[in-house]
Image (tube, rainbow, N blue to C red; front, top):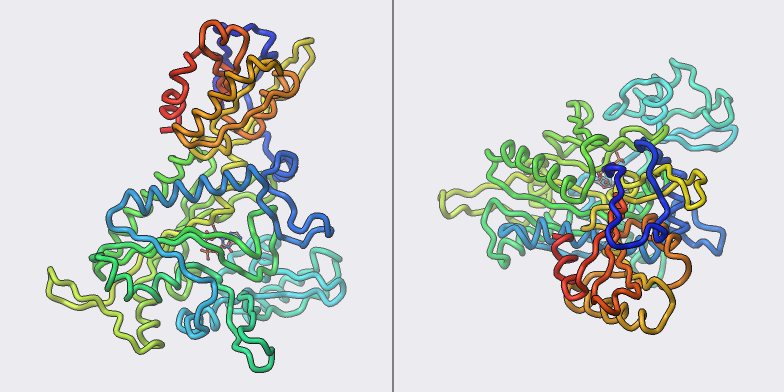
Length: 490
Ligand code: ATP
């Protein structure tokens, strides 16, 4: 993702841009820099900020909302619109409480919790074991984890006292009530994943969706988890969005479909511009598998600093577990009649799951770069640039009249309107302040192209396009700009 440190100045004077990359860039990114940039530029704000915030809640600001929307739209067009055998669903967050009994969430969606009796800090037992003792803990029972913690005499990482409790299970589903009176209301859960709606509506989709196995149901939506240790900016949230596909296949075709999805998920990362350098695929061990899965791999990303490798996406072979459970709990026949083969079966399910917020976070981290430069006066300077792929960048271009003059504004405004109408993309318009500072602002939010309208534009009907990554500049005819920009985004 690093641009060649090379500048080509065509027809625009050098003074318009005063940076000269001096050295090869390294990975300058930290989580703190991303959080600070996000707040400064309106990408992500702390939730309920004017009330002092509500821990671990975040709101997407004007540019973050665009980034997130671009991710979701791209995902939907890639996996739903462009695939003839995947259909969409937009289900409710509240579902019948029996759904979560059938899915195993009431029973199994627990995290092992450890408290410190002295300072009242809370930890996940499995994280303590993995991080402090360097042992694998996923899949172990609370009793086994308690034994490991006691054996190691582990002290509270916060206050240092030997006062950690044993591990106990804590269900992560948020609960709420339907009905006016708390005593007589029905307790329901906020869904902890979007997946279950696809199983619950599977029968309706088969009956009305004109689909034949193999086919998929896709959904994008909110999920809620009462995480014990949320944090790391928008990495682990209480409320987040998922993009999930349940892909229904013949029972004997699970393995080949799994491999195909593995490759499609890689293709998606490439498409949104996440480099392979910090991505790896990790196969779950047998004892780590969820109760519904026969095989799971995680796409892990190497986050900066102490975070290190963490799950970005997952791919699971859920077999016929979910349809089998819902068939049993609902009493409805969920088998599929395969006309071509004249047989009836419960399809198996491959589930690629993508976190929206983790995608946005990884895009920001992966795109963040700092270039050591010198300013017009020859002083060392740092250019912060988000090398976002144009497909996901909030603004696709910025129109910058060189000066705040009505004759320049007229040409610039007309181009702004044309880009909105003809290629329907978000373009920024900025005529205030020095052009170098305006370029710098656009670099920081990842705008791939700055289009400068200058006094020559009035004569030659051309503008200067400045490329974000290498600051190369070229002159284009105004009439050609919409088509040119559309081409860059394809
Ligand atoms: P983790 O091990 O990090 O808790 P998980 O294995 O529980 O994740 P899944 O149940 O597989 O996660 O959820 C699917 C996807 O949803 C994850 O790959 C991730 O992108 C996203 N996700 C899960 N939990 C959260 C969360 N608390 N905040 C933000 N995104 C999340």
